Figure 1 (cartoon, one colour):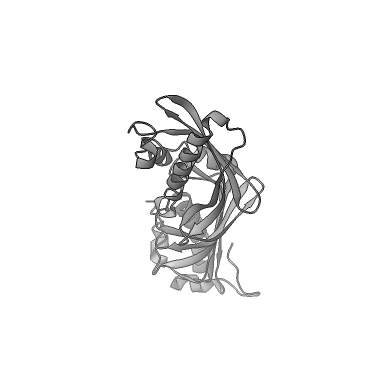
Figure 2: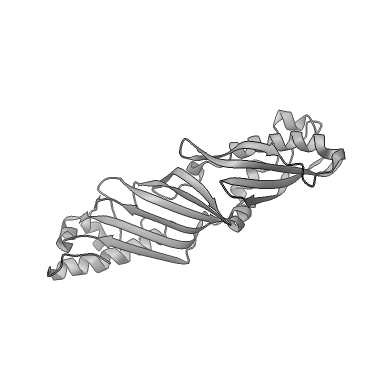
Length: 264
Protein backbone atom coordinates (compact mmCIF):
# COMPACT_ATOMS: atom_id res chain seq x y z
CA UNK A 1 0.00 0.00 0.00
CA UNK A 2 1.33 3.44 -0.90
CA UNK A 3 -0.12 6.51 0.69
CA UNK A 4 -0.97 9.59 -1.34
CA UNK A 5 -2.34 13.06 -0.67
CA UNK A 6 -6.11 13.34 -0.49
CA UNK A 7 -7.46 14.33 -3.88
CA UNK A 8 -4.09 13.75 -5.58
CA UNK A 9 -4.50 12.20 -9.01
CA UNK A 10 -1.81 9.67 -9.77
CA UNK A 11 -0.19 9.46 -13.17
CA UNK A 12 -0.44 6.11 -14.96
CA UNK A 13 3.35 5.73 -14.70
CA UNK A 14 3.30 6.31 -10.93
CA UNK A 15 0.48 3.81 -10.49
CA UNK A 16 2.40 1.23 -12.51
CA UNK A 17 5.53 1.94 -10.46
CA UNK A 18 3.64 1.40 -7.21
CA UNK A 19 2.35 -1.99 -8.25
CA UNK A 20 5.72 -3.01 -9.59
CA UNK A 21 7.58 -1.87 -6.46
CA UNK A 22 5.22 -3.72 -4.11
CA UNK A 23 5.63 -6.92 -6.11
CA UNK A 24 9.41 -6.65 -6.40
CA UNK A 25 9.83 -5.69 -2.73
CA UNK A 26 7.83 -8.73 -1.57
CA UNK A 27 9.89 -11.06 -3.76
CA UNK A 28 13.19 -9.52 -2.62
CA UNK A 29 12.30 -9.85 1.06
CA UNK A 30 11.33 -13.49 0.61
CA UNK A 31 14.74 -14.17 -0.93
CA UNK A 32 16.36 -13.18 2.38
CA UNK A 33 14.95 -16.32 3.99
CA UNK A 34 15.10 -20.03 3.33
CA UNK A 35 11.37 -20.21 4.04
CA UNK A 36 8.62 -17.79 5.04
CA UNK A 37 5.00 -18.28 6.02
CA UNK A 38 3.96 -14.72 5.23
CA UNK A 39 5.65 -11.48 4.18
CA UNK A 40 3.78 -8.16 4.12
CA UNK A 41 5.33 -5.06 2.57
CA UNK A 42 4.06 -1.51 2.86
CA UNK A 43 5.62 1.33 0.87
CA UNK A 44 4.79 4.94 1.74
CA UNK A 45 5.35 7.66 -0.83
CA UNK A 46 3.49 10.97 -0.88
CA UNK A 47 2.90 12.26 -3.46
CA UNK A 48 3.18 9.00 -5.35
CA UNK A 49 4.85 10.72 -8.29
CA UNK A 50 8.07 10.95 -6.21
CA UNK A 51 8.52 7.26 -6.82
CA UNK A 52 9.43 7.97 -10.44
CA UNK A 53 12.48 9.84 -9.11
CA UNK A 54 13.29 6.94 -6.79
CA UNK A 55 12.22 8.70 -3.57
CA UNK A 56 10.27 6.73 -0.95
CA UNK A 57 9.11 8.14 2.41
CA UNK A 58 9.35 4.81 4.25
CA UNK A 59 9.51 1.11 3.68
CA UNK A 60 7.87 -1.29 6.14
CA UNK A 61 8.05 -5.08 6.27
CA UNK A 62 6.51 -7.66 8.57
CA UNK A 63 7.07 -11.37 8.17
CA UNK A 64 6.02 -14.49 10.08
CA UNK A 65 7.52 -17.98 10.15
CA UNK A 66 10.84 -16.83 8.71
CA UNK A 67 13.60 -19.43 8.47
CA UNK A 68 17.19 -18.15 8.36
CA UNK A 69 19.99 -20.35 7.02
CA UNK A 70 17.62 -23.33 6.84
CA UNK A 71 17.67 -24.01 10.59
CA UNK A 72 16.89 -20.83 12.54
CA UNK A 73 13.24 -19.82 12.75
CA UNK A 74 11.99 -16.38 13.74
CA UNK A 75 8.33 -16.26 14.73
CA UNK A 76 8.06 -12.66 13.53
CA UNK A 77 10.39 -10.02 12.13
CA UNK A 78 9.57 -6.44 11.25
CA UNK A 79 11.43 -3.33 10.22
CA UNK A 80 10.55 0.17 9.10
CA UNK A 81 12.94 2.55 7.37
CA UNK A 82 13.12 6.31 7.12
CA UNK A 83 13.32 7.88 3.66
CA UNK A 84 14.87 5.59 1.05
CA UNK A 85 16.45 6.41 -2.30
CA UNK A 86 16.19 3.68 -4.94
CA UNK A 87 17.09 3.20 -8.58
CA UNK A 88 13.68 3.21 -10.24
CA UNK A 89 15.11 1.64 -13.39
CA UNK A 90 16.15 -1.46 -11.43
CA UNK A 91 12.51 -2.03 -10.43
CA UNK A 92 11.61 -2.39 -14.09
CA UNK A 93 14.20 -5.15 -14.23
CA UNK A 94 12.61 -6.91 -11.25
CA UNK A 95 15.07 -5.84 -8.53
CA UNK A 96 15.42 -3.22 -5.81
CA UNK A 97 18.69 -1.31 -5.87
CA UNK A 98 19.41 1.21 -3.12
CA UNK A 99 21.29 4.36 -4.06
CA UNK A 100 22.77 4.37 -0.56
CA UNK A 101 22.46 2.20 2.57
CA UNK A 102 19.53 2.89 4.86
CA UNK A 103 18.67 2.14 8.48
CA UNK A 104 15.46 0.84 9.96
CA UNK A 105 14.02 0.18 13.37
CA UNK A 106 13.65 -3.57 13.77
CA UNK A 107 12.03 -6.15 16.01
CA UNK A 108 12.48 -9.93 16.05
CA UNK A 109 10.49 -12.46 18.08
CA UNK A 110 11.78 -15.96 18.79
CA UNK A 111 9.84 -18.71 20.53
CA UNK A 112 11.26 -20.92 23.25
CA UNK A 113 10.68 -23.93 21.00
CA UNK A 114 12.60 -22.36 18.10
CA UNK A 115 15.52 -21.46 20.39
CA UNK A 116 15.74 -25.07 21.57
CA UNK A 117 15.59 -26.34 18.00
CA UNK A 118 18.42 -23.95 17.09
CA UNK A 119 20.76 -25.83 19.44
CA UNK A 120 20.55 -28.80 17.03
CA UNK A 121 21.58 -26.66 14.02
CA UNK A 122 24.94 -27.39 12.39
CA UNK A 123 26.26 -23.88 13.11
CA UNK A 124 25.62 -24.37 16.83
CA UNK A 125 26.56 -28.04 17.05
CA UNK A 126 30.07 -27.42 15.81
CA UNK A 127 30.61 -25.05 18.74
CA UNK A 128 29.32 -27.35 21.49
CA UNK A 129 30.84 -30.64 20.29
CA UNK A 130 34.50 -31.67 20.28
CA UNK A 131 35.17 -28.90 22.80
CA UNK A 132 38.86 -28.78 23.75
CA UNK A 133 38.78 -26.11 26.46
CA UNK A 134 41.70 -26.93 28.76
CA UNK A 135 39.69 -26.37 31.94
CA UNK A 136 37.20 -28.98 30.76
CA UNK A 137 39.49 -31.53 29.15
CA UNK A 138 41.36 -31.69 32.45
CA UNK A 139 38.32 -33.66 33.65
CA UNK A 140 38.25 -35.97 30.64
CA UNK A 141 41.86 -37.04 30.41
CA UNK A 142 42.53 -34.60 27.60
CA UNK A 143 39.66 -35.82 25.40
CA UNK A 144 37.32 -33.26 23.78
CA UNK A 145 33.82 -33.03 25.26
CA UNK A 146 30.45 -33.08 23.55
CA UNK A 147 27.50 -31.23 25.08
CA UNK A 148 24.05 -32.51 24.09
CA UNK A 149 20.35 -32.38 25.01
CA UNK A 150 20.57 -28.63 25.48
CA UNK A 151 17.26 -27.20 26.73
CA UNK A 152 16.45 -23.61 27.57
CA UNK A 153 13.43 -22.26 29.42
CA UNK A 154 12.56 -18.57 29.31
CA UNK A 155 11.82 -16.94 32.65
CA UNK A 156 10.52 -13.46 33.55
CA UNK A 157 12.82 -10.42 33.61
CA UNK A 158 15.22 -11.70 30.94
CA UNK A 159 16.18 -14.74 33.05
CA UNK A 160 16.66 -18.21 31.57
CA UNK A 161 17.07 -21.72 32.93
CA UNK A 162 19.36 -23.92 30.87
CA UNK A 163 20.33 -27.58 31.08
CA UNK A 164 22.49 -29.99 29.08
CA UNK A 165 24.47 -33.22 29.44
CA UNK A 166 27.96 -34.46 28.71
CA UNK A 167 29.95 -37.65 29.21
CA UNK A 168 33.27 -38.19 30.94
CA UNK A 169 35.44 -41.32 30.59
CA UNK A 170 34.32 -42.58 33.99
CA UNK A 171 30.85 -41.02 34.16
CA UNK A 172 28.04 -40.72 31.61
CA UNK A 173 25.24 -38.15 31.56
CA UNK A 174 26.85 -35.54 33.79
CA UNK A 175 24.24 -32.77 34.08
CA UNK A 176 24.80 -29.12 33.19
CA UNK A 177 22.40 -26.84 35.05
CA UNK A 178 22.28 -23.07 35.39
CA UNK A 179 20.19 -19.93 35.55
CA UNK A 180 21.34 -16.66 34.04
CA UNK A 181 20.22 -13.25 32.80
CA UNK A 182 20.27 -12.58 29.07
CA UNK A 183 22.10 -9.39 28.15
CA UNK A 184 23.45 -7.64 25.06
CA UNK A 185 27.13 -6.84 24.51
CA UNK A 186 28.15 -4.30 21.87
CA UNK A 187 24.66 -4.53 20.38
CA UNK A 188 25.45 -7.79 18.61
CA UNK A 189 26.43 -10.49 21.12
CA UNK A 190 23.99 -12.22 23.47
CA UNK A 191 25.58 -13.05 26.82
CA UNK A 192 24.49 -15.09 29.83
CA UNK A 193 25.21 -12.76 32.75
CA UNK A 194 25.02 -13.40 36.51
CA UNK A 195 25.07 -17.13 35.78
CA UNK A 196 24.47 -19.39 38.76
CA UNK A 197 24.79 -23.13 39.08
CA UNK A 198 21.33 -24.62 39.61
CA UNK A 199 21.59 -27.60 41.96
CA UNK A 200 17.93 -28.54 41.56
CA UNK A 201 17.78 -32.17 40.43
CA UNK A 202 21.57 -32.71 40.47
CA UNK A 203 22.59 -35.69 42.62
CA UNK A 204 25.13 -34.98 45.40
CA UNK A 205 27.67 -37.52 44.11
CA UNK A 206 28.12 -35.60 40.83
CA UNK A 207 27.60 -32.06 42.16
CA UNK A 208 31.27 -31.01 42.12
CA UNK A 209 31.82 -32.21 38.53
CA UNK A 210 28.58 -30.64 37.41
CA UNK A 211 29.57 -27.23 38.81
CA UNK A 212 32.89 -27.20 36.97
CA UNK A 213 31.34 -28.36 33.70
CA UNK A 214 28.53 -25.81 34.01
CA UNK A 215 31.06 -22.99 34.38
CA UNK A 216 32.83 -24.17 31.24
CA UNK A 217 29.55 -24.40 29.35
CA UNK A 218 28.73 -20.81 30.30
CA UNK A 219 32.00 -19.70 28.72
CA UNK A 220 31.03 -21.50 25.52
CA UNK A 221 27.64 -19.80 25.46
CA UNK A 222 29.10 -16.34 25.97
CA UNK A 223 31.30 -16.75 22.89
CA UNK A 224 28.68 -18.34 20.68
CA UNK A 225 25.65 -16.10 20.03
CA UNK A 226 26.99 -13.34 17.79
CA UNK A 227 24.55 -11.77 15.34
CA UNK A 228 27.28 -11.32 12.73
CA UNK A 229 27.17 -15.10 12.24
CA UNK A 230 23.48 -14.90 11.33
CA UNK A 231 23.41 -11.83 9.10
CA UNK A 232 20.96 -11.83 6.24
CA UNK A 233 22.17 -10.98 2.75
CA UNK A 234 22.74 -7.22 2.79
CA UNK A 235 21.10 -6.68 6.21
CA UNK A 236 23.09 -6.18 9.42
CA UNK A 237 21.09 -6.46 12.65
CA UNK A 238 21.92 -4.72 15.91
CA UNK A 239 20.10 -5.04 19.26
CA UNK A 240 19.26 -2.21 21.65
CA UNK A 241 17.27 -4.29 24.13
CA UNK A 242 15.73 -7.69 24.67
CA UNK A 243 12.97 -9.01 26.88
CA UNK A 244 11.38 -12.32 27.77
CA UNK A 245 7.62 -12.46 27.56
CA UNK A 246 6.09 -15.82 28.37
CA UNK A 247 7.57 -18.30 25.91
CA UNK A 248 8.85 -15.55 23.61
CA UNK A 249 12.17 -13.72 23.41
CA UNK A 250 11.80 -10.29 21.81
CA UNK A 251 14.70 -8.31 20.35
CA UNK A 252 14.36 -4.60 19.55
CA UNK A 253 17.01 -2.64 17.70
CA UNK A 254 17.87 -1.54 14.21
CA UNK A 255 18.94 -2.94 10.87
CA UNK A 256 21.35 -1.45 8.40
CA UNK A 257 20.24 -2.38 4.90
CA UNK A 258 23.06 -2.19 2.34
CA UNK A 259 21.27 -3.93 -0.48
CA UNK A 260 18.40 -6.22 -1.31
CA UNK A 261 19.09 -9.64 -2.82
CA UNK A 262 18.65 -9.97 -6.53
CA UNK A 263 15.69 -12.11 -7.55
CA UNK A 264 16.81 -12.54 -11.18
